[in-house]
Image 1 (cartoon, rainbow, N blue to C red):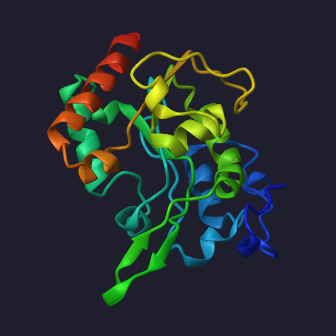
Image 2 (image 1 turned 180 degrees about the vertical axis):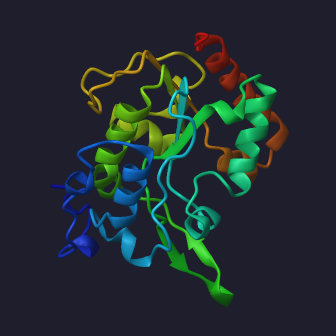
Length: 226
């Protein structure tokens, strides 16, 4: 059972998502399960659960952090500004964005109310990632990607553990960890890079965008023809 990482989390039930994973995995059953999930408290303030989306024969699964404001409202992953930048970067790296499966380590938006009704993004904690891990495993079992692209620290930690650092590992093929998340399907490789939202916030955006594309070109070189 996922526990709390702070005194503020005491008394919050986080049974984890496992009991909401459908016995028969299909895109529709997985989507319905995510909508029904009560594995942690984030569902209470979310508009939608946001399951992964894309081709089930995708060679590459892209894993981000969590849905953002627009993703939460639309119920689809990577439809906001960071998602649009990701699509551009994929295309610049000669990867057809229509042929990848996109998802997040956490399936509900964690946010705080801001001024004038603006919802302020708040990163998920390790307990939210742990509670949501069964969904990532189910998506791996369903899609069976050749490799996984990890966007940012949260996605990296979801697969490799809390000690993983994107900066030390980005832009190169990594073996799937033997002691990491375990599904019935083991991808051949993983590549970590910065999350597109970090590029959008950067004061050296052009330089950081070029670095993102360079990392994605590594992914393009790893993908085998299917």
